[in-house]
Image 1 (cartoon, rainbow, N blue to C red):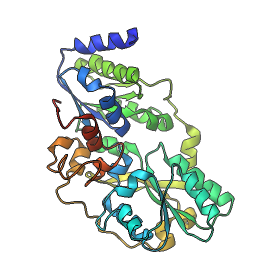
Image 2 (cartoon, helix red, strand yellow; image 1 turned 45 degrees about the horizontal axis):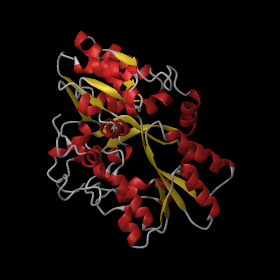
Image 3 (tube, one colour; image 1 turned 135 degrees about the vertical axis):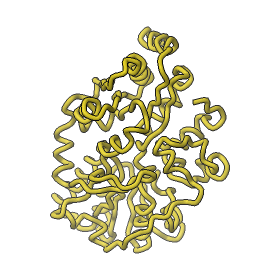
Length: 353
């Protein structure tokens, strides 16, 4: 262990300040904090809760129903693997595949585009789900499709942006642990203004053990002072300006829209849809997808987990009828979900926080 990490542990062990409720906005942070054993060395005064930082988890059931409807129309659905087992009111994409639907698991939007190029006789829809981190890749695939005049490729969008979620969740925690990869794109401006204008404290954190420990030390030092604060504790990746090129690419292809977040509801201007002059790539328009009801599984408290108001262990289904092998809710399905992290790393056995 480096001297820096030893010193961080010493500072955290000596903490004797007020209780702090820290929300991990990022699903990757949730899993890494568990995997690295960081929870075990945090002061007992630190309560770490999960928030709406898993894109698959916050995607509403109505979106899954739209995707299943398309699969039933003999459309090839290209998607990241996590989405395949997320249930909607009419079942999951896995259920649709079992009935003959064509579900193609891909690792990037460009893989979906290449499948469309290789199979010009098939209509291919990529399920574009994610935050600012992954949205540029979807836009880049669309740009290439336009340049190469690919006519059988479109997106079903559920892209979201974090600013509205931060503000909607502002009273759910004392300090936000901001996602480093999101702010590598957007920069630090929003976090700075939230601290100055809204009194919302937060720290941008990386994903290595030393980076996460540094972020928690920053919280331990600043929170007891009683003033809102913001610190970029991930400067090797996150800059003030972020990635202007990625932001311009998003703005070229997409525009803000109101968007539904599972468990939170509709947040104004928190989603991204294709611009009207790009609607030839919009699967909803291309295929005339009907309005979907958006039913969620009975008894599942995934929505409350995403709000930070209930821990996974507070759901009556957790570890009983809902497990990674037989998931009921999106938070157990996704590799970034809080329920998945609690189950995988033993939070359900000994959750003292």
